[in-house]
Image 1 (tube, helix red, strand yellow):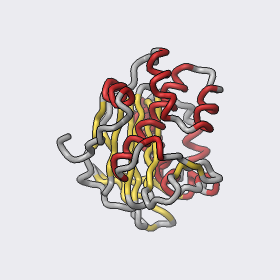
Image 2 (image 1 turned 90 degrees about the vertical axis):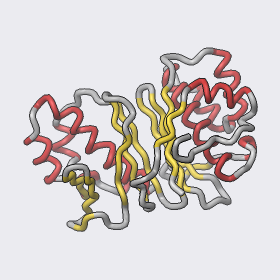
Image 3 (image 1 turned 90 degrees about the horizontal axis):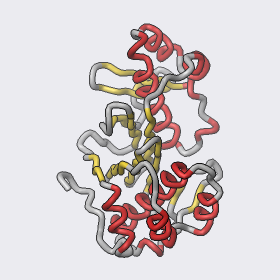
Image 4 (image 1 turned 45 degrees about the horizontal axis):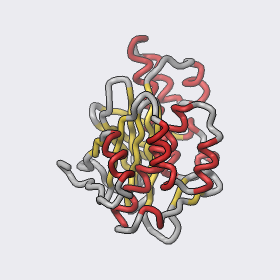
Length: 241
């Protein structure tokens, strides 16, 4: 079953929160996070790691401290000795995690003005035409509509360094979103977006059909409370939770 959860972060993390979260981080990740210079980067990295492990712990019904994440040579995280697939992303004040039984990728981005030369260099000819035919005021949001879908596909593939961004297209027809690879629409992948806030975009790419997958929105206080109690309470990811 495919599950997606997102959490909105505070502007800063209090020292007591970091002290409470640290015991649940893998030693290697803890060292890597400690080297991050910006406090907001540490906040996003810590909360992304904890939300991922909380979801895995709930799905597998295993203590969170028994879970040690590894990474592929291309950097994609995975949990050894389990068939669970997952992916995480963070940007600005949001962290999102997708968990499923088959390959999955998720990407979150805060909308901002980008250098349009990026579109010419990295987007497919079809996407370039769509972008430059759009009104100027719509282009920032359109850029991240396309970018998050493209990134989610690359992350789901798990070998992003070998995939050229202009080798496939994101094609939108009304509410329908299709991945087009070598002229073939939806070659075994499903795309959809999730609403966070108007200035953010969140896109999912999965092997599993995800049209009815709910987005579980969490408060930062829920993560705080879970950490204080050892993540003993299972995180409910069912519709309406």
